[in-house]
Image (cartoon, rainbow, N blue to C red; front, side, top):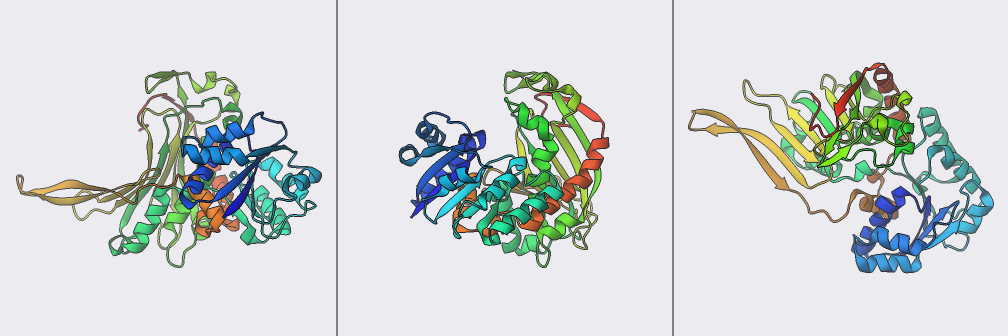
Length: 418
């Protein structure tokens, strides 16, 4: 099987760190012969070497193979003539991946209208999908004026993380969990994605979004919607029902992370302290549906922490005075843990034990699965049209609380914020 992957923004950070390695993973496992065509306004130089280096850690032979066919086309994604030349003669089995800022995406879609787009071409739209609810709805309208819904893949790679997929599988396949999947048995839910990395030269991007818009608007809200939706409930139903209860925000000060000194966020190159950009947030929401209302759901993410905490944790209501059971899955690994109360003969009482296991071994990263979803048209790995808009609606409700929250400070290298 042969596929052509045209990447608008093909020499950017996302293409280099995530997308091209994901293509290499899929090619290595499925034996697909990919032609990667990068596109951008300026020539990056040796694009074949750019592709080879990006894919080298996955499989050296695959990296060399991808590099042998890689090409770069200087093109303005907002100009019809440039786009026509870019896709002309590529055949019908083509993916166009929009690794573009949302303010450019609508212009690029409009420019595509005169570019003779084949009916079988797939458009993959990287997040953020618009920059508010109105913009997301507008982008949907422009896309559907050009393509059928089946040709559109809205990317949120958190839907393809191990934790999200395994949580969905555990819930559906195990009566022990299925029968307890409601506010009758669940006491609290937390989704945490705290990272050790600090700004790392991404001031231009981060200053335009902040932690909440970067991580909450799409990743955590879409993940929450996906894992709570069950039976007759859809992710869209969950997003509509999100009601913010409380919000905190903060930004890191000078500290040490993994032995490396990190400056205060406000002293990082390219940061304007007047922007009041948060690097951490913690919000608590209620999902006002008969199944979930009354369960506090905590969504948290931040940078420059002393340890990585990337997990989904479900806490069940306790039986009497016993400790509550917990079910925990990592976003990025195959670990699952559940706590149970067992007998403690020495004290003639009970003790908490933790059962852990590795689930199916990792074959692909989240972006490898994104590529799989695009190529194989796997809907559950993509964000639906309405969910993309409703995610912004929920973010706007939460954003009003975040805007009023006092800016806290935490030292870089702290393990957790109380």
